[in-house]
Image 1 (cartoon, rainbow, N blue to C red):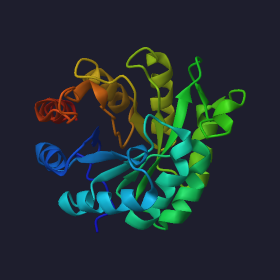
Image 2 (image 1 turned 180 degrees about the vertical axis):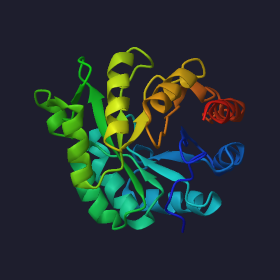
Image 3 (image 1 turned 30 degrees about the horizontal axis):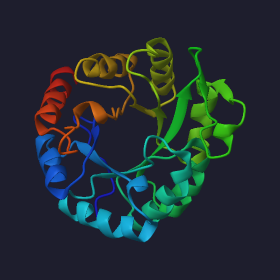
Length: 245
């Protein structure tokens, strides 16, 4: 099973949600495989049922799946770790304090584990208290360089900068992108990304010199009636990636 993400020109891979095997296959084809398709642990009643269902997606799209928390829900950290331990997906989403546990559970160096870090309100500083208990405590705000060093210590692959609220936290995002480039860590901008701001958000990370970028584009491209990600929107996003990378 392939456990490495396929980045377009080694730089960018999309992360979008799906609600069916048919939709997942269409997403995979539309991006020529430069994608990880999100499956949320919160959508399942328990870990065994999640594993059973997600295995079908693994087989259909060469393991290009992203095991998700569900809107960054810290209570799902353990489920993500347990699912990922069995499936060894290409990508897993995790809260900051659970990354080391998850890397040990997955027991490989190739599956991509992101690390949920939140805006603090101050460029150059980020909030790392994103776990089930720490998120209820006073904010733990540290220099982004310190967060990156801790992420590397734990075996994490990237900063998942969430919730960005689109370009509302642009100055903070620029500072994070520059730090990720300088210290050789991947970056996953997440929250409020849509067809209108996608290009600018990815371009900022490219201009900063970030080596690997995984933009998450979720609700803005989901059809409200079917619940499926709109393939025409995925095609648009992929065309933008091919234009700017």
